[in-house]
Length: 409
Image: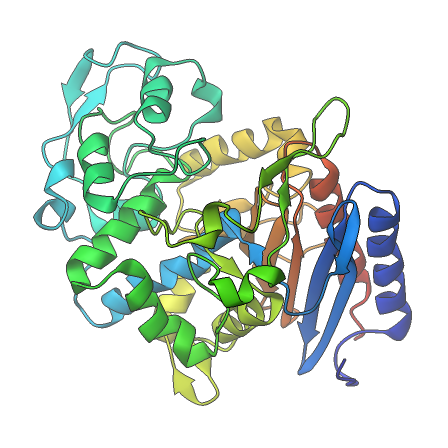
């Protein structure tokens, strides 16, 4: 741990460690790694074990499945293409994604799949970047034919069967109508995976190769990838999905022979990355620095500002806030940010201890990654406990509550 005099109080850090330790001692969280940094001072806690029955201890370089916290990092690939004028915000996506040309839109969200009207306009790059292209995971529409079709076609990453390769995935997506008119409504998840395909087709490289060359390598993110190679697999814990009723630990994904032990058919920016606290710290610190790392420019300052400030209209935000507020078990205070930029949430009002302007996101595998320009603060908390029960959400909430108290001004 590096000591400084610009960041945190000793008392505050001690309290944070005690609160995190309590969650592990409760038996509900086998282990965690947390990194907090401010003003050049970085502090890391590794508490507990890799497996719920004990075994190897958590370490600073433990590799975690980042789930939806992949979104803010993978988004940088598209921003590089905007900076280089290889993509424009209002380009139509048809030329690269012909599967999304000439869309039909459902007349009503819960209606039959053939009860549609033509889309009022084509889908643009901007629609994909802001998650408003017309399709997404809508938890308020579970049971509707369109949501059933999304699951049946294997279009989301959390199903028992992994997603197919990018071209087949796009083909299946192209058979479905949109849920909403392009640009009309914010919807979660699917736009990020479409972006993975868009970046690959524009660059002629695999999505991971482009990310590695332009983002991961320049930032020194040596453990960030879409799978864990054999020589690092001992650093990946099992991922648990506790039973919501009994709290019993079920293994959702084993390290050896599990989903992340080999390269996936689909490199999805919606939730496919694995990483470490130090790799994510490098990325979020780059955003706090306005796009630079160690004197090298990774993204332009305007690109960073576009990503990390609210892009949604008040109407779009109302729907998003309602989703967060009504999913109390999941959001647990997180999620009620008020805004969304590109690939991440943005705080537009003071709903808890975090400052307005804080940006980042949480992941369903028990991960939380945010930076705060006002306080020049980065916080990263990684666990191996999925959100099937509220345990990791409560831990994440307590992490941020104690972290903001630990700031020394």
